[in-house]
Image 1 (cartoon, rainbow, N blue to C red):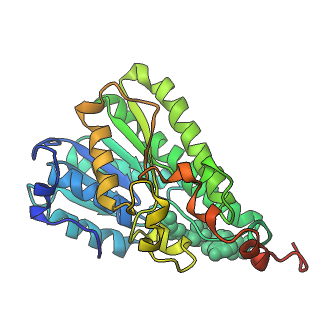
Image 2: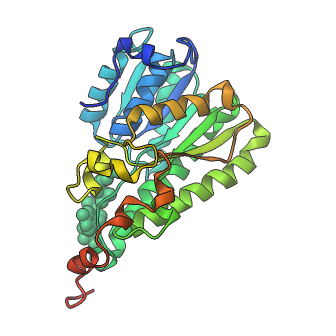
Image 3: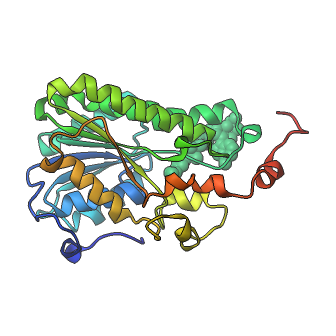
Length: 292
Ligand code: COA
């Protein structure tokens, strides 16, 4: 798998090795391209982690691989057959994690669903599927983890996006869902702050080799986006992992309700999909003359 870390990767980072010793992270979508590297860096820094996913085989395999980076073998648990649309399945996963590791300090709600579809090709069921995974799934994850977060005065990160800062074609379902995720983070930060729980979002930009980019790029290679990023490179999963460590660490003790945009400044130029040939590409996809 591209972009994964190894034991000597820690030398590339500025963090101290035992930063998350005795801490436990619960990560939905943890076997996916972005969240897996978030998990890897937390584990390299001493945390234990539960990776949660729908696909049992993929999730358990990823957990075994990430465990190779741990300070102590057996520090990473893979829990498959969990759909974030089902809060009971999430509660059972929380119980398994606590049974194994005794606590939960950090939650990453990273599970997401996406595909390219303009309004004329997007059924009500398809729109609902994405809103349910991204938005309801984020709510369900915190709902299930809340008793443990209260005990640990823990911290939550939602994985959001920048698509909804502008009107992004082919992404109305995700844009609506992620706008909801941002709102959820802000409101939860206010509600849970007095309990000592911090809630923030990370909004990744163009992340090379990520599953999201490969699904959404219309065949454009990551390098071709470089000029559209003020910092003149596409992002890496390590950039997202670094923001994760910052937000969970003591360095961010006074930071809650924020949306940490990690995109090299790109959204200020308009989102990448907004730069596709407009309206030609859109018109070529629309099913205006068939049943809508
Ligand atoms: N274009 C248009 N509609 C699509 C679609 C596409 N590419 N892919 C799925 N859909 C529609 C389905 O046709 C269905 O609607 P319909 O019955 O009205 O036709 C609806 O979405 C639900 O599909 P289903 O496969 O039953 O949903 P699911 O819950 O199993 O899957 C998805 C959820 C649709 C988000 C699926 O893409 C998925 O599981 N993705 C997970 C991985 C992922 O997206 N990662 C991206 C990270 S950025």
